[in-house]
Image (tube, rainbow, N blue to C red):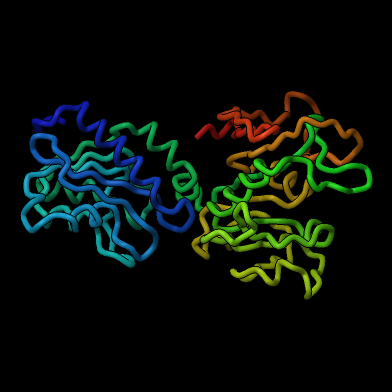
Length: 346
């Protein structure tokens, strides 16, 4: 930092710790995961905090609440996201930092929200030294779902499927339980819990009658449940299991994906998990609305026509949707491949 005695490596170390603190907050919801570390003038950690979800204190205020009056005077706040500058369910963090007397603020990523942004400018106006972009790449990657949703004005979309190595999701007679093993299936439930909504097509509901809950190893409901969203025009039986979901169920009555995503964003849904069927998955791919793919591959060969993806409008190899693999993980006897579209690469 330009005018502070705290070394840059100390600031970076504090930022990495703030990033680890942010991960304690919920991955779902309208608010981002944010962590904060407050350092004394000599670089000693005075306090730390993180955001626990909508309506709770933001990371900066959470950290400041652990200090006595005047203890933050002259301190440096290290925050993963630019302090907010608006009053919502809580007050602006920029004003809280100014009132606490901090001398400097270092943050990683600018807040892209038109409503909440501007905290850095407000801090500078008040004479607080501000340094932006500390470990920006690392923090941006960790915050990618929320940042993508905020910048695009629609939920972050993850498309998932489980298939054999030859890309089949079911046998010729339609049976599909279970292609993958227990470890892979439990990982899917954990991904459901990290999402605001889980999307399936009417065909999946009619064929499989899923409950669409997020469950633990013993079948118990996990603390957070995604809202089921059934996409399509066909009627769903009133006794379908999805209608017994603890969060209620949204039935779109249409297949206009952009309109559906807009409506979900307006409901403060920022992260959706597309799980239901090759037709719906293919529609998202063809529309260019996928931000991340989770592909669970079982060491099996099935053959036949039950493909994970159907026609996505590719007529020649040059039109193929190119992906970048970001992670490969073994789950029991299965593989999880995580990939994202090359063209967005964000």
